[in-house]
Image (cartoon, rainbow over all chains, first blue to last red; front, side, top):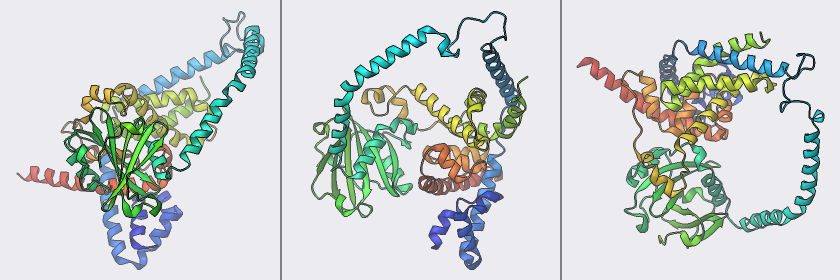
Length: 278
Length: 174
């Protein structure tokens, strides 16, 4: 294990946490400390800062009544669950309340009738769904020639809402370029002419199998994403010398190489929606 | 009384503080943090019995709080970041982050300034309750991604922390 790799791993080791030290990966890195004084000094400094931050963070106290409030609420939940459960036990009451959804299904003839209808519907509907299944297979076939990196981006873009917001939001593209560079993500050295002057929305960073990617989102009459990847991180098969267009479901992509970077432009919809940036 | 009642007490005592701190790091709001912690335990009261492996309670609670936060955030924002018309409506999303009050302690203030993508794993890291593999599970990202986010996040946090510590010292001496 090289020193730099060991540093990355040692950053996972928190002061005073035995479980961290017993982790095989961390233990292997810790073993290097004895023979490497420089690494040892670096680690001691890291631990001191981590300890200081952890200690300070632990001073953040919840409201004094929070625990009591949680316990009271949990007891109320538990009691409600108990009463709902006992209501279903035969003999628990002289007269049972109205049937509930949890009552044994075979005691309710309507559920049985509904089940028969469900089975019949399934038998009728399944053959009609086959074309849709073929259609999915067709999509998979169409995607077969699309580079994995593009397919990864399509998935990330489809799920972008779950990220909970931009890594950094700004309407100034330059601020986002600077931010991406500051966090070690690829950042466009210059913006495509067609995007210059357009306000940005924010940026995201992605990690594709260890390959960092930086994405700036622009707003014009549509949202356009400019993704930047270091050329040296891309496989030779994905360093397009001429602009190449890909379509993955409802995401269109245009990729090209310029200098040390591979740029990918993406928007929602068909390829005709991609701006003519180069 | 429920047989599970003593467990509630133990579980709440063990985790309500770290859950509150994690909630605070996400929501940056005391009221919301308390509410998130509370809601997490209520969900546990309803569904916790289905959790067969009790050693996973801790991870389950943190994961539940995180998902609850994301669910609320999506609901509040009522926007799809991908739709231009929605982005127009949500013009506030491009505004800089709102800073919290001055009396917050140094570490919390510094953590608030860290970019969100790093703040979540860092908060869990400094809480010291979860191993890095569990942090990856809670945030539902690969271990390699957690390692790189922690590394970058720590670098960013240290810079902010040092700057704030210097500023505080300067204020004291002037």
